[in-house]
Image (cartoon, rainbow, N blue to C red):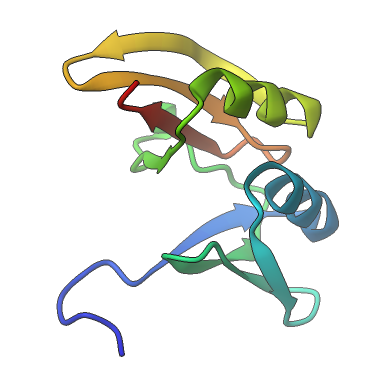
Length: 117
């Protein structure tokens, strides 16, 4: 049962669902369910969400919220992002409590990855 008044689901725009599924499956281990040409949902183990058909991109430059994932090994995760078709838009930097980088997925959506190490 979902937790009352907590973030429960997140959606991103995408055009090529197969490329998006390949990227997130191979990089982060997400699983997907295809709901036809306009929507594909995902589960990453803690939070569920989906990708809707759109040319738009989720980017902090456009005022979008930044979704930040956690990784035990930041450098290894950065390499997986690059190997699987993502691009780095903000190199690893330190902040109080950890380090993080930001990337664009194959559609151009911006997300971050942080580590406390």
